[in-house]
Length: 258
Image 1 (spheres, rainbow, N blue to C red):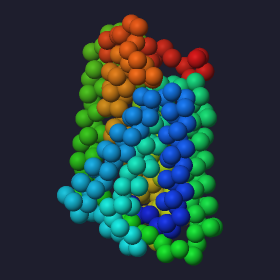
Image 2 (image 1 turned 45 degrees about the vertical axis):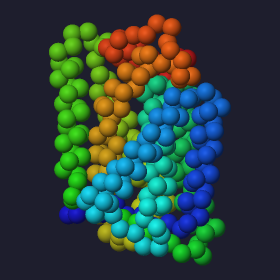
Image 3 (image 1 turned 135 degrees about the vertical axis):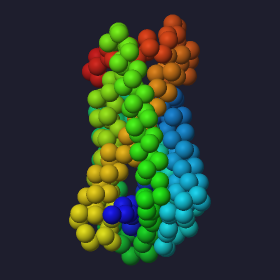
């Protein structure tokens, strides 16, 4: 069965969400989370390259009704690129204010479509969707490649403190996408015009297991490599460490310790 990732929303949702992104970025800047902020913006750009460049121009799997495809995709890419990448980065950091950042993002994902549906119900809705048959196989290759490389590394790493926290990475990779997908479904945006609940749930489950999770290991590697040399304030660490030593540091951290 072809999995269709569809969203239906009114334009007010775009304006509300854009305001939220500005607030989120301002908060990260105010709290001197400069590295996290840069990573989030990079995530937005990356999502746009993938969504417009690959899903639209290459595979022709994107379609839209009621809006301009480029500008809607730009907003969508920056929205979920920034929030997803920021949230993953904070999870990997085991940030001491992780609960607050997490609630800010998740509560907004739940509230935004409900607010837009109430106050923008007279606006012409936008429907955007993509089919996944053209590329899910490629995503699955990236998923298995990342985890297989991490598993092989762990099998040959004798020091258990320097092994990849595989179940932690898996939990984060699934959680972030699931929270996003479930919020869209709850808010009446995801699969809004698809009546078959089996199809709705298939989209929810498959996307949650695959789409963000495929980047869990690579993003962790990037995080470990970057923070082995730099602090959140973009300053060089007093004592830079090697990649494996940084993994050991991260494994030793607990969310409530700092």
